[in-house]
Image (cartoon, one colour):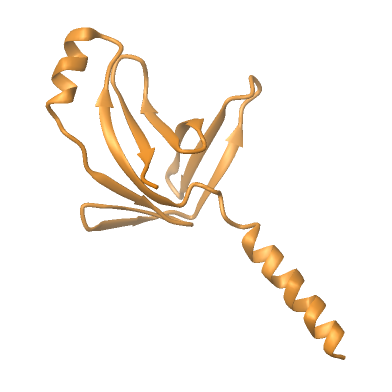
Amino acid sequence: MKAIKYVMLVILVGLLSACDHGFEGEYKTKAGSGNEMLNAFSELMGSHSIIIGSDYIESEGERTTFEEIFVRKSDNGQRYLVFKESQGEQAWKIIDDNTLQQGNDLINITLQKIK
């Protein structure tokens, strides 16, 4: 009987740990641009911290909760961190396991994970 309880506990813990998207943590933001003039201007904006949780983002004391946060892989192999709400979805490009990017080449915000 103890063995069955132990196995059930291990299975439950495994299922719960599989629910994470892997990008939880604190990030520092930095604005940027592919255009030199816009890039110089964006550097004046400074940076701030964002916390990404299992189903929320917290920035400047405000928490936004999402139905789901998950990773989606596109046909060309690019990964995106998707924030799903009832009104739609936002997708942030995953540069690597510690870096996310919002926006495009003209204007973007890079989020670097703080270790």
